[in-house]
Image 1 (cartoon, rainbow, N blue to C red):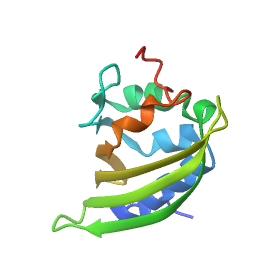
Image 2 (cartoon, rainbow, N blue to C red):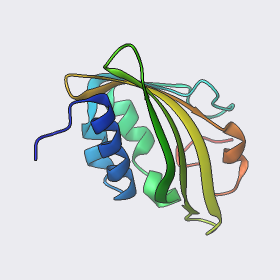
Image 3 (spheres, rainbow, N blue to C red):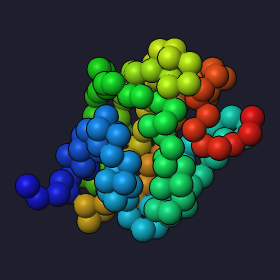
Image 4 (tube, one colour):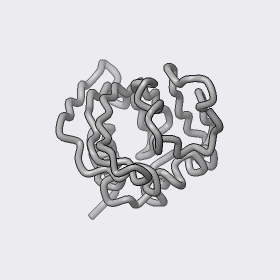
Length: 141
């Protein structure tokens, strides 16, 4: 199977990798100079990750803290730029530390070039990280 190259296919593939807890393969989807931004990040959480290495460091311990089970609501909107999509989605699972349910709604603007993610702006709900067991970034809140 060849690697997905369209923004839609690559994004769907990235979600499957997250569900499989294959963070290394998820990070491999990123361009070396890829940019991940969190415009609504609360104090103590990163707002901008520059480069694949920074994204890898951020995501490294994700499965140790959040056990994703599904993305039950996924809508992908095409834009006038075929390399950019707007995604509405919901991720559900559990918080590993507390075994509490995890249920997060996201809107993301994702750009893909040459089969790699070059930009990912993640508009997630910052109130959700007030729950114990959600801090997988190593930040001190």
